[in-house]
Length: 246
Ligand SMILES: Cc1cc2nc3c(=O)[nH]c(=O)nc-3n(C[C@H](O)[C@H](O)[C@H](O)COP(=O)(O)OP(=O)(O)OC[C@H]3O[C@@H](n4cnc5c(N)ncnc54)[C@H](O)[C@@H]3O)c2cc1C
Image 1: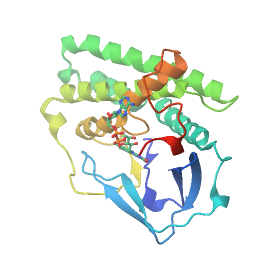
Image 2: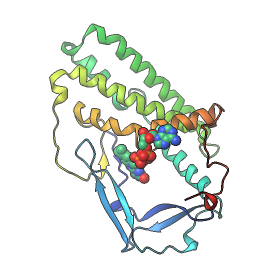
Image 3: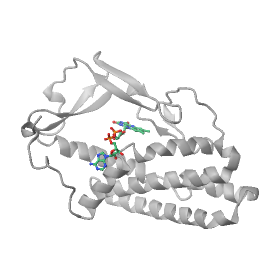
Image 4: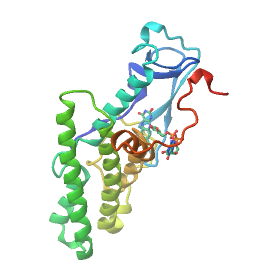
């Protein structure tokens, strides 16, 4: 089974620091071994703490650690985020990931099948296939350049599907679906979506619509930057950061 690395700031050698100073947004690389850096685990609904909050106290970062010219920080940051969204949203092979687990259960355990759920399974299977093929197209586009905002659509679809499929799987599993193996506070090095039980998948999928950009923000990105719809009203958009009233 495929295991994804967690964010794991505690193992990172280099962190990203996006700074709003009085002039603009700057993007720095920061040495995570600096003694002023404190990494505190953030515990999730699964019991695990895959990711962390990072505090910087008295940390000094030289301007030579800046990535991109002054004024380009936000562009570097969005490029980073676009890459992350494509990585999260366009990976699974045919019948891979969660839909593969559910299809396997449906085929191999006829006793759990409920005729009324068949339509739902077929719909989820078809949507997963559409998401997979869209991911293939996205990766082909990526082969000739940097990812654009289109990856936000893939990540948005991935989160919605992961939550729908894991909910379906829980229902299919009946009472077994509510079993959960380990609530102890752990800090795992990898996330194994498919290697564990349905209860874990159901709980872990809740974070999919938050991590790597919330679904609400991604809908804004798709609406404004992919579909070209009118942007949300923002009073601070055309004002330099240094001129914002504070
Ligand atoms: C499993 C998991 C792993 C994570 N890993 C990392 C990681 O590795 N690195 C990291 O930096 N962070 C990580 N995060 C944190 C995640 O990126 C943040 O939680 C996320 O960016 C949202 O920020 P917030 O929680 O402060 O919510 P807020 O920004 O406070 O938002 C609260 C709510 O308001 C909505 N909202 C905010 N602004 C708007 C707007 N303009 N329009 C519409 N809706 C809006 C949001 O969508 C959200 O629902 C992870 C989170 C999870 C659950």
